[in-house]
Picture (cartoon, rainbow, N blue to C red):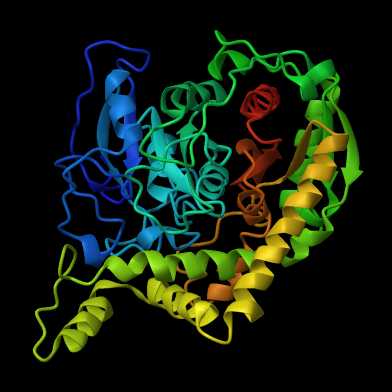
Length: 438
């Protein structure tokens, strides 16, 4: 196995039979696995071994899957390249010498390299779709609430979702079938109606069929499907990415889909709003890592405050510290209304724009990432460049909607992904549309 893809290589066997029997799964290292180290890519949790399984892990085991390792990731999910990991960066199997995307880069790389059939990642602002695009695989960011977050080490609770990677749309959809559904241990989950959504003509009134599955929706039938192209998510993207995107759109049109331009004016503020909200939630969530109950212990001399400060100084990397500091500042007295409240207002505008656009069309399409994969080491010195690369993915998390990234082709030999966004719990529709590009 490739050393840089996994932080911990360990086999966890599932049940003898089930829908995923014989299927190997890589699991992002921020998802709790009982008795197997879960580090979040951080020195802070270098030796942490959870005493319980996340709900998605329990469901994988029951479905007969074999977990083959805990995949590398940006530290605590904070990054777009998997280079902020304490355990080193991961090379991109689809584009050696380039980053695999992040923060779920190890999971996407495992599928791209054939080290696992499918993989689990988590997506707070694009962390499944970005690596799927950069590694030339399929990644699904589910609707907020479709998949339990119980056992996911929290970064930004109101934004993040666990989701699947696969080599094909059907593979990813089959994994989604296993992990989706309500969980009494996660109050934000709900049971979504399973719908095949196979007839494009009435796609917005998807038939509810309790027997159908997400995998069954991968029919590739896009005849009559209305696709909206948000101009704001295409403008400014790399020329080669845009060219590859339009070629993929032409392929969908040739199969009977209809396209029209739509506008999402509020997305120009989405990146700022996202980072204020995500960093604020991160500063709150990461306050628990004090070296007392669990995590790295600096064993510093002096009073408790000094020991606490030294533990966090040693345990967290630069990007995590940056986000904790910015989030703490945004939530501090006198600045809460100026930053956090404004960001929540902007989030409401983004959500409203998506709702209005999806009232006109069935799905929205854009390049997943506005740029091809960075070279390893290229973006580390410029965090702002890294943040702006999330421009096409973060609006979806702000709006709590589902999205899928599917390979669209290449530019200069580097993978390009096409992102499809649908209405809440419209995963079946996205799976049907995305499978038309395979």
